Image (cartoon, rainbow, N blue to C red; front, side, top):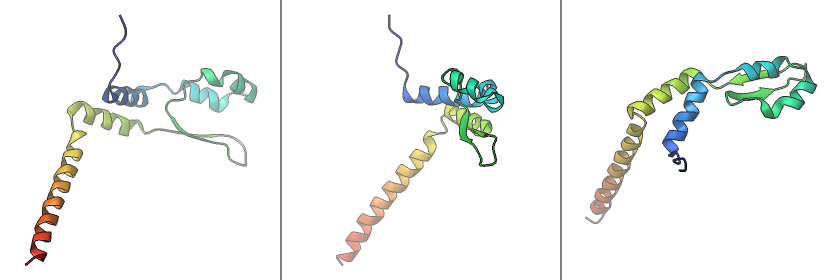
Length: 110
């Protein structure tokens, strides 16, 4: 029996869970490991939570992570169905603009 293919919404929620609750152990290893170890083990590292890596001219490394609080908020909103509300608002706004355009076009004929 094959595995059920996930919907886009399920994939998004899984990604948000990984951002909100994921480990940063490998990122810390990346920060403090010597270059040879990094080169050898980089494909094995879980760097999903990292949004940016920089190597400044002065040396060292900067690692920025995705915002866990924002991921939690988005996850909560997706679980509560809040994410569909802005789309409904924009649909209503678009429909209102169409009606206003039709009313305006009719006023020009007079």
